[in-house]
Length: 146
Image (tube, helix red, strand yellow):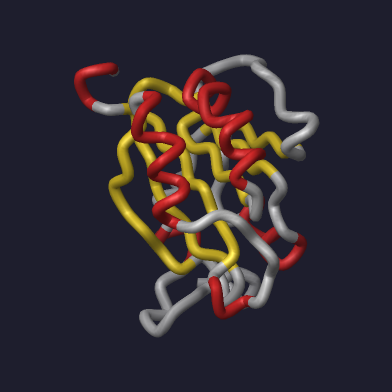
């Protein structure tokens, strides 16, 4: 593990490993916080895209991983179906939100994310500490919809 590889939590597990990032993937980060920019270099991705929530558009689908950071339920509600259309059928979406202890103003929680995404056919498969500020919920397309 290089000195520039972000780690979190007590395990010391490299963040890229915790998030399931692998060499050869097509990856998109949305609203990636400055303190996590090193994730872009954490693996040998075949494609890496970055966008803000306002500039994220339906583009070329087939991303293996899309990781979006938001403190707003409204942003998630506007973008959830678009995220689902952009991932590969077996791909993953990570939605990260500010932890309560971070003191970042937010109207989103782990339960809020589920309320928004479960009805459209996504299912949560993992939760992880992304940083001292962010928690993340890993989502996939429900098996019967793939």
